[in-house]
Length: 253
Image (cartoon, rainbow, N blue to C red; front, side, top):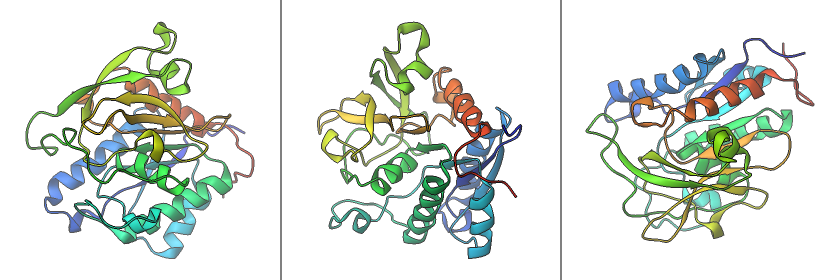
């Protein structure tokens, strides 16, 4: 049976630990806003959540959104530290648990910025620990830096964002990241669906898993609507709609 108001678990950073808690709280609320705009019920979860709180959230979620934030500990993908700026191992653990639960229950997953990198790592990929030219001003400290992304024709992400262009085309997106995914870093089983230029060569700006289940990662921040093309509102809608549908092994209590 389809769910009219799907519960979307949104993993976020612990506000009180951030250098600017007010901005951190605002950033977290933007993810929830994106879910609510399309009829979903966001359930924000951070690393302070107890085992019981995590279990309850994962057992009743209809979708999983891994949001932006600090760098992932390179030990998660078997590499020495070569450029992370901040790491939060307890958040890595929370999101690894959330990913495992989403995989087991077959719910759709959307990864945004750090969240996309987390999906890639949990699926067996690696990361480029620093790339120049893609950071820009921090959120709340000036206009967003932007760059072009090239959508890969016939991919699910391209069909969502550019249906009138046979699934291809170019969009300008915001950019707030200093780590990246190259072709060689992409996890087995994931397919690149958008690319951008960088000093390190082309980097993956969007990816997806083939098959019926929705698993999509984007490197930009579509929740920041003031610097996001309107086309990305379709991605929010598509994700929440996917969470409404039945999935094998999913149960609600």
